[in-house]
Amino acid sequence: MADLAEEDAMRRTQIGSLFAEGRITEVRRRLADLHSADIADLLDKLDEADEKLRLYALLEPDVASDVIRDVGDTSRDIILEHLSDDRLAEVVERLDTDDATDLIGGLPHERRGTVLDQASPETRREVEDLLAYPPDTAGGIMKKEVAAVTVGSTVAEVIAQIRARADIYHDIHNVFVIDFRGHLVGVIPLRRLILADTGIPVEQVMDTDMISIPVDLDQEHAAQRFEKYDLLSVPVVDPIGRLVGRITIDDIVDVIAEEATEDILALGGLGLEAARPMTAMSAIRVRLPWLGLNLLTATAGAATVALFEETIATLAIAAAFMNIVAIQGGNAGVQTMTLIVRGLALGEIEGKDAGRLLGRELLTALANGAVLGLVSAAMAYAWTGNAQLSVVLGIALLVNLLIAAVLGSLVPIGLKKVGVDPAVSSNVFVTAGTDILGFFVFLGMLALLI
Image 1 (cartoon, rainbow, N blue to C red):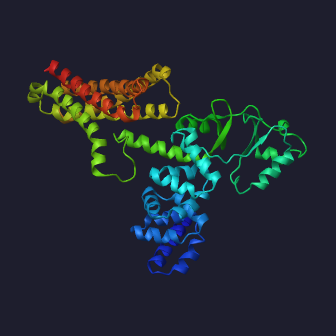
Image 2: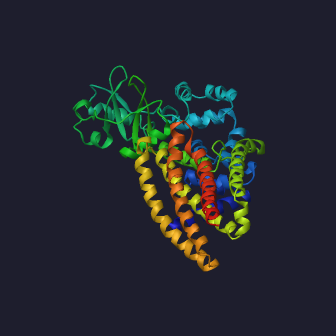
Image 3: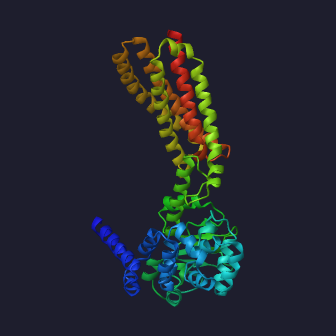
């Protein structure tokens, strides 16, 4: 596998060198041997916008359509900005409807109509239908290319229809059966269709116990259904059960990547900041509120420490040890919080699970806290020879890990219940809580002993 990756990288490098030397005929020949994803990768690695445009102009229409789907956001924006409307319409015409909709949806509003006017009436109608759905719903990610037959059709008629439209049904997994009003009534796996007697009606080979997805279902919940039922393709229905499209596994892979990126950005307080480059002013507007909230929580932590100024002055080493308590509690809290946020995002955890999860995390924290508390107490005694300080450090560490378990478990679930995204907000509250309470427990116990 590594050798194959190195070979692909070398091939892309050679094409890049030929392109830089102006050997266009040789570049065309080499590009014909590359997968569209590799061409997209080559485009993304070109530094100059002019180079991206010149290389893209060398591609045949079918390849150009695949490449525009695979390139990074920066390259796609550059290409779309300079691509003529008629050339763009040609590209859109060759894309699946879901990819065409994503491409058209990213254009300025006034340009959408211009490009769609140059596409076929069928493509225009289907893209406009899909644009009407919110982009983060099943309707927003589905495609309109559906192999659908009406009840009463024979297996032979279905196979003939698929052959006649092979250019459209290039990734078919199932054939959907609808009644004369368009309602979904069954599904036939392709394997069963191929093996069935050609003279029998579809009703004898279709499954009526099937998984379907409402058109307004959130894309993240749609991805959870794919995972739960090991689906490759699933029909999408409107509120009265009419078949309106289908979602395939490649769409869900994109959704998973998108949702994972959003969660990672959210955990860093960047929930509204896109992965693509943005202006400094936009970045300031996104990040400043969360940095401001962190400033408030840090001030609260400093105020807690200030309450025990005399204790720290009496035993200066306490200033070093209190950070151990806070850092260990913060790390433990983030560990628990990350598991809970992931479970909430995947639909594996609901509010009713809070008690069970809290019990498990408290037991884990008790075991970890006992071990770490003993180790830290022994290290503190070996360092300072102060038995009281060592005992306080060990107990405070144990208590703060228990606090971390409570906050890491309940804060994300509580935020979810009140309608706040736990991926965005949990980190601030959990780390602030373990810092402030960790300082208070350690310094408070130390003050009582001193």
